[in-house]
Length: 236
Image (cartoon, rainbow, N blue to C red):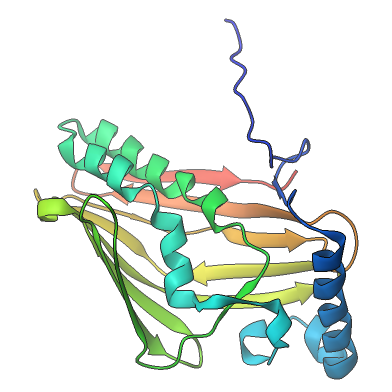
């Protein structure tokens, strides 16, 4: 059997993970200075596995968006892959399209700057080019919880769920996770659920700035007997 070789994207690190290539020395120095300033201000609280969502950060580490808008970055492939899933008549093919959609969004969520925490009751609405509608709302401030609903054209599919975001500092790495169920529901009543893995941002203080995803993803379609598939993402 001949092994296939697939072309890797330019930002893929040789040892795995997403490598930030567009960094300037000025950007890196600015971000790392902010981290050192925080280490000095918060001391051991910053490195004691405390949830970073409860700590105030300097504005220099933020991007001009809130988390409600940021989470939609991972759904960029919904018009392509979830529409294919809705058209599929074979449950296994549909299952594969949903898995493809979930994984395809990871590289588009690799960003260095932190989004602002949404205020309680804040909402975000958007539309993809094919007419897919996005609705997000912040339902809790402490802990931060975001609810979302994404509706495909003609309501042939819906993606909904919620996420509770947590993050902690590990010496040279920030470890983050969006905990909560994701459900893709189709017009015939099929529901496929899955969870997201952990995200690790390395090189916070020194070394190359690399993002990797870690941990298992469980996909379930109980209606069609595809009850469990564990996709394990491991660090290199």
